[in-house]
Amino acid sequence: MPTLDVTRAVAVAIAPDRLPDVITPQVRSALAERHDCVWATDELGPEEVAELAAGRDLVVTSWGTPPLDLDALGDRAPGAVAHAAGTVKRLFTTADRVLTGEVAVFSGAARIADSVGEYCLLAALQLLRQVHTYHQQVRAGGWRSETHFEPRELYGRTVGLLGASRTGRAFARLLQPFGVDLRIVDPYLDPAGAAAMGGRCTSLEEALGSDVVSLHLPRLPATAGMIDAARLASIPDGSVVINSARADVVDHDALLAEGARGRLRVAVDVHPVEPVPSTDPLGDEVLATPHIAGFTTDCRQALVGHVVAAVEEWWRTGEDGPDRVQPAAWEQLA
Image (tube, rainbow, N blue to C red):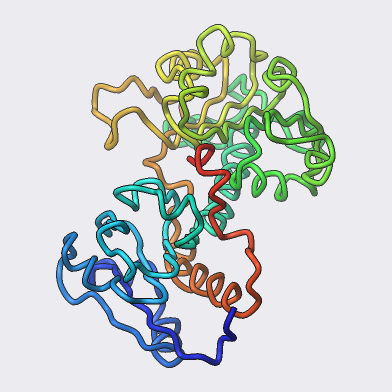
């Protein structure tokens, strides 16, 4: 693999109005200084994306970039694609040249996962302490002596992690100072991998018996409806359930019902229909957010710098880092 001191041909296929959301001025200047860059100048369509990508060493993409037709580019397909966003599955009209490794693909999913992990920690602490319920009580003119809430600490609790994805691992790292009993369910995780995360592999039933249950499952045929009403009913009274993954991995209506009647303390960041219709039965007891678990200014503006740095390290060393999408794992991607 050539060293980084060779000037690279880089195309930034991100619409100008979206670009400031995913790159800082400092990173933009540094990128232009290090490489031979071309930038999208208009609203992006498939033809402009193809023109930008043709013959380039790297194409940088993000939300709003139309799918790339790698086959149509023939031998002028880019050597690498760096996606300054999360999932890459909708980025290509066909993934054949990605799956063969002919085109290397890098994703910002790991950087987004750090932000999602922080959201999960926030939700767990807020729901265990019942902060939002106290907030509503004070706003209504009440005080703690008039309530029958049972605030609890996170320290020493049991936590069930459903899925050892990047977001699950990010949450696990943040849980380490709290001395939790971390129960992890993932068919691709072995005991050594679970131990490295600070937890242990368990059955789904044991994980669902935890004080905090956090969903980190991808959208796959095998995970659709995996946490159904019966499994939700098996979660102990007063437990926290957090869904920052995909709405369809759980019986969403059953989850909201458990939260609305106060049996479970529920946080949902993902919804079957987004934006959420006014008829959706969220209820005051459910901590509902508009798909913002990974949506912080810090995270978004770090994305281009993050994925370009990963590609530059690959150019420098020739070795795959954690941000390269592995073809063998394509089917398990969210």
